[in-house]
Length: 185
Image (spheres, rainbow, N blue to C red):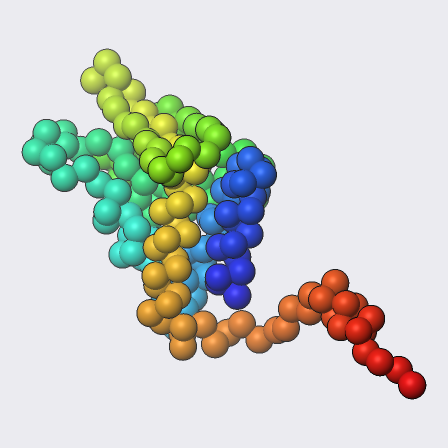
């Protein structure tokens, strides 16, 4: 199932349906969090813990300047906040009041959409303007690529943890084609 969802994100990006792709990838930590922490009752905790372990810790800037003056980054708190805003309210806002980590509060959040580049290299940017306005600009393609690659690797390594998928998808077009090819006497 996860590979099909990842393929759907890629199709959405190919069609430049950025909000469709973004909405779907923001559900991936929900799914993987359920696989990794099946006993955890809090969806928020599962989401943030999985994201921080498999994606978020790689989003922090490792340079010395950023260690002394922490820059905003896509932490589990921030991404969970984005997920809630987009999926429940239809708006890609970050509510700084809901971010507990002061170093990661974002006052100005921007989404960047751009067409596919030959090498799939896209960038985000963060900063602190006038010493107090914390900004973050996220490229939707970059975010989707990171989520898809991280989730694919996690899924390939932990397929046995996804035993909660208990349904079948029937591709009616393929089934209909099979029926056409049956020889009836």
